Image (tube, rainbow, N blue to C red; front, side, top):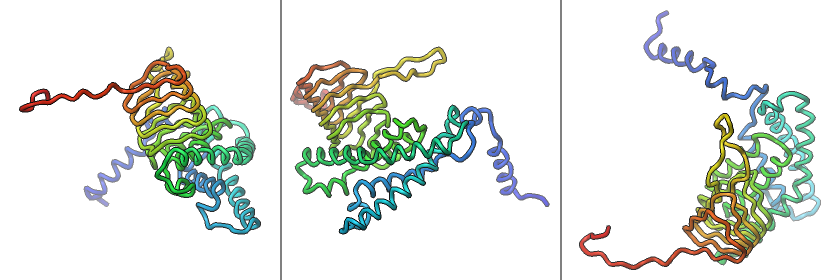
Length: 302
């Protein structure tokens, strides 16, 4: 039977797209099994939120007995789901694809469950910091339900804990989900202390090797990035500390850019739209020069 032009086009392109090209072979991991599921990892975060903030992201439980029951159900479901995704993540990683991934994944998932009380403690300090830094908010519940930074920090603190357990790829997926949802880009490798606050949040970037102390506040558009990076003999970037260290009680205002392995000393304030590539001592005030008022006539100077 002769194919019509549409069928011919479909058949030709399906054949081409089905070829396993050398470029694709170079990019696809050699490990066997399914890759981690993005939809399942969204469900992981949803379960964590309902466990840590049980009265906000599911029906409120007035009885302590029912609260224990529903959190128990959530923890059991979280463990089963996360164990499967960790196993997929281990198989995704070429260096971890051999061995008993099922047992390793089970142990990692249990270790993560064991870290949930500390994750909850840290997140509650973040909520308190946001409440203390925003006169527009009426109560803590408003922050938990509405503020994008809570969404981003749940993702970050979960991802950071998973990364510390040595789990590949999954932490990056989780923080990039929050990045897509909120515009807040936090690498799971960053170290962020308690009572952390981001006001508004859109456009904030926090690099992998950042170290951020306690009671630090950022505003929208802040970048804590790398000034440059070194290359190895193969031309690949070398993963060394290259992002800022932000000490306790620092405030960085909107659209400030802080680059390189520099230290912003305790209690410092960095003003908006500042470009900073050198360390500053504790108690510093880094501010813009005042704007110069100049009149123009007939479009001159514009």
